[in-house]
Amino acid sequence: MLEVKNLHKVYDGHGRRVTAVGDLTFTVPEGQFACVVGPSGCGKTTLLRVLAGLLPATSGEVTVRGTPVTAPPPDLAVVFQEYGRSLFPWLRVRANVELPLKAQGMGRAQRRELASEALEAVGLSDVDNAYPWQLSGGMQQRVAIARAIAYQPKVLLMDEPFAAVDAQTRADLEDLVRSVWQRLGVTLLFVTHDIDEAVYLGQRVIVLSASPTTVAEDLAIDLPAERDQLATRSDPRFTELRGQVYARIQQVKRAPAAEGASA
Amino acid sequence: MRFLRRVLLALGLPVVLVAAWWFGSAGSQDFYWPSLSTIVDAFGRTWTWEMFQEQVFPSLWRLLAGYLIAVVVGVALGVLIGTYGSVRALLEPVLEFLRAFPPPVLVPAAILLSGIGDRTKILVIVFGCVWPVLLNTIEGVRGRDEVLSDTCRTYRVTGLLRLRHLVLRAASPQIVTGARQALPLAIILMVISEIMAANEGLGFTVLQFQRGFQIPEMWSGVLLLGLIGIVLSLLFRVAERSLLGWYHGQRAGQREF
Image (cartoon, rainbow over all chains, first blue to last red; front, side):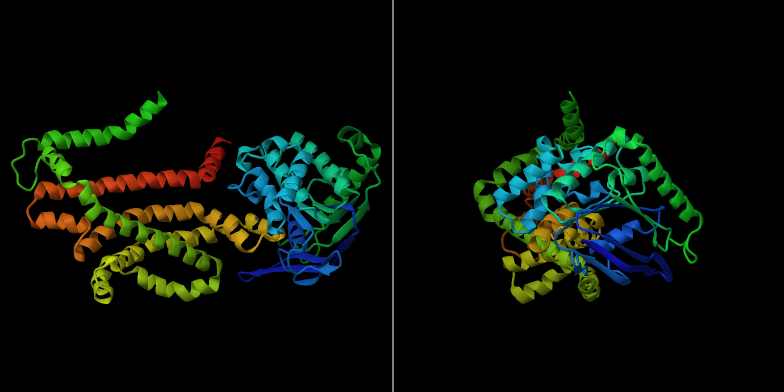
C-alpha cells in the first residue's frame, strides 16, 4: 500500500524557491494499478522520486506498506524514463538483471533462475548475453522491466517509461506491463503524460493540477480487466473516460493554482 | 583491403622518417651525429641479454612498480575525493600545492632522505604519475550519471558491489585517460631519477656512454628508450580495449543512430 499525506516539496536554490508539489494527498491500496497524469512540469517526477525515497519531502508524509519513507524502501522497484541511462552499459543484459539480486546476497543458482524467468516474461531470453547498447530503445526498456520483475517487488513505480519509444513498441510494452502487473499482483504507480495510456492501463487515474500540485481529479476506470489495444480503445466508455481526463487537464492548465506558474 | 590501407597509413610516416634518417646520415663523419647504420650496429653489440638483465630490467621494474602504485593510489584517493565533498574541501589546497612541484626537483631531497636505492626512484615516479590519474578519477567519479546512481539506490546496491559495478566502472574511461597521460611521465621520471641518482639502470647507462664519448652507444640507448615507450603504449592499448570495450561500443552505437 502506498500513502501520500499532505506531501509538499519545495526546491530551494540560487535564491529561488520553486514549489514543485503543493499539497498532495492520496492512497493507493494494495495491488492496485494507478496512473498519474498531469500537465508537464506538474511535479510528477518529483512525486515519484519522493515515493522512491530518492528525494526527501519538504513536509508531509509518505508511507510505503506502512513504513514512512526516509530512504529507498525494500520491496520497491523503479523503472525510470531514461532506460538508456538506468542500465549499466558495462554489464550484459543478464548481469544487469541479476545485479540487484546479488546485492541481496542471493545465491548464483537462484539468481540465474529469477533472471531467466524475468527475461522470458519480457520476451528477451535470446539476448541475455548482449550489452544494453546493442539493443533498440524498446528492448532496453524491456530489460529494465525484467530487472524490476526479477527483484520481486511489492510496489512498482514507473516514471514515463515509454515516453521515448515509438508508437508500436509502446503498445506492446503497455500490454506487457498489464500482464506483469496481473501476474505479480504488485501495487503499481504509473506516471505518464499520455492520457490515452493512463486510461488504457490503469484501474484508476489520478489527475494532478499544474504546479503547485494537488489532486485535481481521482477517477476510477471501470473498463473490463482484460484490455486489448483495439477493442478497449474503441470502447465508447474508453472514449468517455479519456474525454473526462482530457477536459480536466485542459481546465487545470488554463487555471493554474494562484502562486504557481513557476516550475 | 581496408586493413592494408590502415597498416600503410599507420606505418607510412615512420618508415619514411627512418629511411630519411638512414640515408641522410649515411657516411656521416660528424662524431656526435653518427650514421643510423653505425647506431644500429652499436645497438646489437651493446644491448645484449646480460645488459638487459643488469641495466634494463631494474629500470623497467622500477618503472612498472612506480606506475602501478601511482595508478592504485590515484584511483583510491580519487574515489574518496570524488565521493565525499568534505574530503575534497580538506585535501584540495594541499593537493594543489603538492601538484605544483616539478617531480624532478624532489630527487635531490629524496636522495638525502632515502638514498639512491629503488625506493627513491619509485617514489619520484609515483609522485609524478599520481596527478593525472587522481584528477581524472575525481572528474570521472563526480561526473557519473545520476540515473545510474538512483538505480543503485532504489535497488539497494551498496558497499563493495556499488564501488565495483558503479563507481569504478563509471569512472573507468576517465581513469584510463589519466593512466594514459601518466605512462610517458613514468618513463621520463624513470630516466631522470637514474640520471640524477643511480649506479645502474637505463638512464644511468646512457649518461655513462655520453661521458665516455661512446656516442653511437649513447644513441642506441636513446633508441631503446623510444622502443620501450612504443611497446608500453601498445600494451596499454590492448589493456584499454578489453577494459573499455563497452565504452567504445556504446559510443560507436550512438554515432550510428
